[in-house]
Length: 168
Length: 339
Image (cartoon, helix red, strand yellow):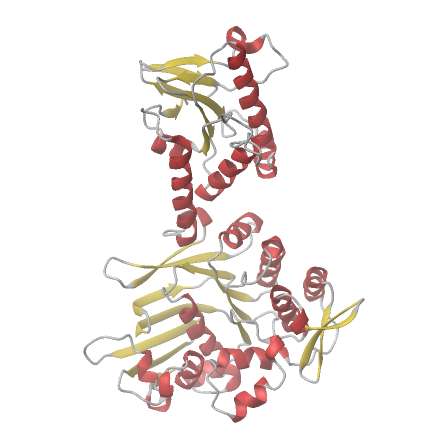
């Protein structure tokens, strides 16, 4: 098992999975003009782009939490996620590392998100990335193979191999 | 005086069921066939007889409309003979009716507590799923003169809607409610020769020309304006979301909350996630809301779990539908982490 942290969240990966904490100075930070997802994991047949949002961070201010929830409802978080994904993809492409299908998993650590909310956010993200190209069918390949939005409970339910937990 | 509890035994879908009510808003949720409307009809019948002075079994018969008006058909169906019992309670009184599956006339049912119960009138209104105002002209006289096969809730809602406007000054709470409804429906409701119209800048629009959702809100406006919905009244509303544009759900829920704040006890049955969620998001700390989840247990009997917190509703038939959709969506989107 290899272990990584992002703020107050801890994620564990099987040892045979190559993982980079992507959104760091060494990996990415010198390019201020590009956004970045938190982790990139490489499996034999795919990449996982992973992004954590933690409005329930124990040290988060109530006003920040409320602001996040409002932004989430308005779709502003989807907008941010879209750029993080696309910029990370471009960065990887420039490094000649984006040759396998990429799945984008987003964790929003907010207990009050119901399955209905997660479904709505997943659909919205698919439209934004976007999951499929133009109706003319000119895209030879997709820019994302699949994406899903989780809360802590559903993340651990669907992705038990890469469990996430709170540090404190 | 508010309704506090309903208990029934071997009545229609129920084997044994007790539900404790909130004095504010009561929301029934559950799959089809779990008896949401039945519970509301029982409670409504108990309220209505305080005004109509009909016997409780007679009113039950009229709102449930068993074949041949045989009240015994309301006993939960089983092999052997059995008796049904329904009891509705308010703070100090209780009203009870019981009858066997062989009881063919409502007057043969056993009733207790009725005289005391009737002594304190309780205004009530039941808004059925089907919109009725556009069918108003002629319906009431037809219903009164002929044996037409309609549950009495349909005739009752028209009776209430045709009441003339309340006299005297309008208090602030009522005025605010009417104004917010007028904004949504863009006008006021007027009645001319039993026909309902929406009056606005364009003139009088027949109800038959309006979207069904607007007709429903127009009905609500009428009931507030004519004083049917006042402090102390009881409102039963079966699937208020039906035919309403989801964009209006927020306004609808705000109005339901305001009715509760004005002292009206509210009973809703809903299948809609947005209605539930709007209620959860819009309610304040002082709003009294109780969710009643009806479900079939392993033996197939209907049970009820009541909770004041949205997230504690269990089982939540509506949210479960979304969970199932989310599950299938995630499975399609990920294809697992293991190759």
